[in-house]
Length: 178
Image (cartoon, rainbow, N blue to C red; front, top):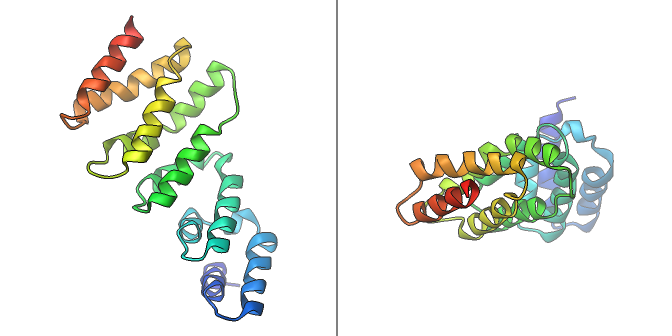
């Protein structure tokens, strides 16, 4: 059938005041739906849902997709989401990345370039996310492979960032070059 229609119906069920409807939605969304049926847009709606159990399920399902090749696309969409909770969820994921060899980490960071640039380019919002992303990037400058990606991000930010943020990107580039 119409998967999108079914998913929107499920979204409505989650809002239902009836426990059995919520239980049905919880079972379907939590266990039955294949990952392929869940678009980033739908997951973002769930992650931003007013009810805690829906947000938790959304985050759980989103985490499974974050390791997939389209993670960068999902992250970039999430980076543009105004909700602080969504922003913090994404940066938590970033900080919880497993240790990996510098070439693999550099490749992953390259995929995440649009995400980094989106977060760092936000003016007057996303301060917590910005701070966390900056800390993440600063921690990646030890290996030449990852330092090169960080330098690329900083170089773009020097050109595009607000006057308030520019000095730290300049300092970051000088530190990498040293």
